[in-house]
Image 1 (cartoon, rainbow, N blue to C red):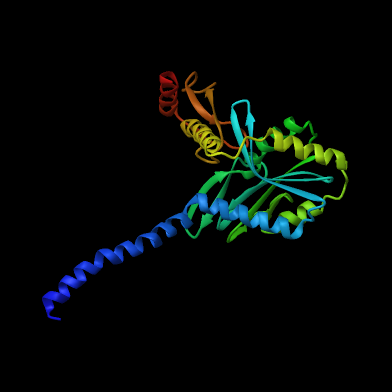
Image 2: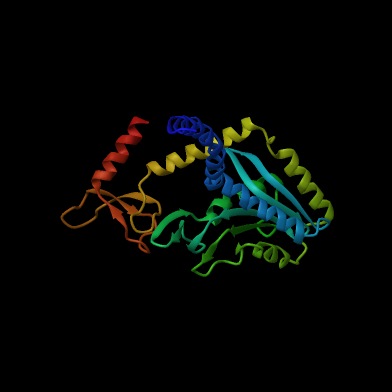
Length: 274
């Protein structure tokens, strides 16, 4: 084969090689996606529940979407037992995790990179309340549980119901007081199954759209530059700027973060357009 023939052979082979590589790039993209990480985290929780929680005493219900007054809410896992109903929120994250029960936002730190994310206990609060309203259960009968999976480490003390890996199983098993009768357990399971929305693509798409709408509304509101909490409109009461409006942290006086009138004016203009 001369040089010309070799060159033509290489040119013809390159497109074929690229086509063979495309599936690998697609798989790599899917694996890195937040969707895949979420599903992988849920799979870990499902497996550990099946392996370490007795089926006769603990009933696992997965991916439950319930209607609410303003849309829908979706729960990763609900575990029903005579010891209570456990609403499990899963987080598949890596790096160092900083936070406490009262903070609105927690921090994920990977080397020099850090980002804030919503306190998963706050996120799970709506799930718990929605379930309580559906089932007519008390605070003592429904537990909020958060489980982190993946290569993450807590760098601040966490509440007992915020766990890592199989720790959530230990938390559930630690609840030994009977809070529901066997008949009530069956009634709860039936109520969840009958009240949940069908697991269809249409319902999932509506739920995703609802979540994005909520996120868009939250992102349009100013956040405290110090703690990333909610800001409220305030007025200067004394000094040379008396009467002027500004945004102050809702957690004042614990947090004294504030932003000036320019941001307030921009926010008010956006609200007026809406």
